[in-house]
Length: 316
Image: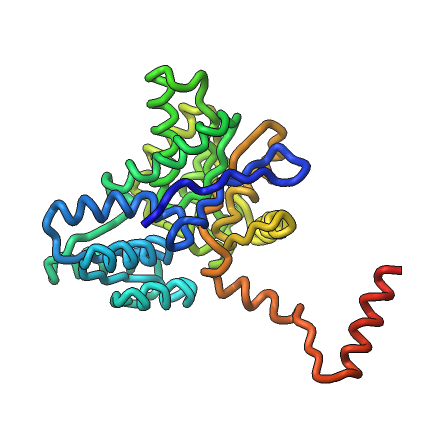
């Protein structure tokens, strides 16, 4: 459906570049892996799929299953943003809302067995990796960065990008491999926690990277070390700071999408680096709630005059 080919945007007055993967068809990087994956599911002859997801994978598979004429059921945590659930339902899918991320995984696997539908779990889905590798190829068409900062939940995107670069290096297509940096929220950091100590927080701000059961953890940790990278853990304040920087550069991502930039800022990285912006701010109800108090409401001429006077005084 036109996935891939997303722009690489340089932030003003910096060496920090953003791979705008929120500009894929369903506004997230997941479309890269899902396009290949659903094609394979069709080859298998499956009648439909069941997926556990906090949001973006559910949305993406719902859209691609609709395109392919496949049945689709998404099992999603209660805290997932309603915008994402509505997007899934829009494609004619069924949403089963459950208490948390772990129960979503357990219930989805049971539904798959009981209903005879293909289970999709990105944590270990081999057919998702080839599609995600394309982000590395596109970055390399522009330049070879010194580092790549990746918002990480299950670790599939990180594993794919790191693997793609190591393969290109092995085949002599690149002269060096960028450092691959894993960035996770302090609400849940099983991979980054292998590299740094952190104080856990109770937050669902960046809900897309809250994946407690990470089956690709060992592989991700190995690839991070092999590329000379490390893990970073960011809190909500650091994520908001990244969102503000992105917004000032015209880039509208969700809190999850800003996690990579938050990691690069925390690292104080001075070399040329790329941050993957994984999904759009349009898919986050927290973004909407946070800005309601910043609206100006004008009911008539008197309020308009006060607004003009306030703005004029600030320009003096």
